[in-house]
Image (cartoon, rainbow, N blue to C red; front, side, top):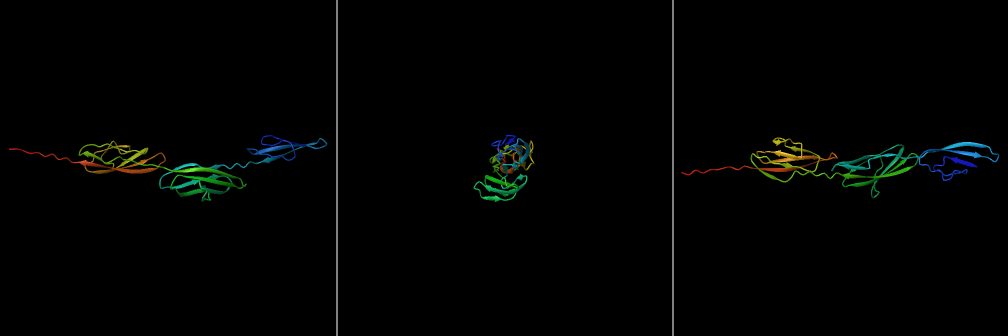
Length: 212
């Protein structure tokens, strides 16, 4: 007779042939007893090959940038990347391509033991959009309030004549003549975008008449 232990992962713990499916690498011991009542013990190590893939499965890139994703897997023998239609994208550890829209991908990793694991992920395009507002008119010598939106950080140019600085969403210029102001915004993903607004300066001249 044969008795196996530990029982974890065993379909049966008795018999000369058993089926083991442990979730982690496990050493199994078997105690055998012959017809004369003599006993002996031996052991067998079942190594579970868990493929650990280091990969950021949810990535956002800036518009116009190349998508670059790199997978890290110990003892990997091959990588196979496909898109959501399972068309091949790459057979190396890195995926590098021009992104034109949000794209789902699948990565199949095979290790040196022949075990495989598949992970899926998404690459998003950052939909950043800057707004500097509409064209505005102001009388000569007066200040005008400009307000941008769409980002977390703002930088206005030209900086000359801006009251309160150029590094906020709000800018307060006092231009002497018509002037275009450009704002560059940066969002939480580090992506940037620009927009501009025209300030039209009105020069009103006073005239007087004298009567005899």
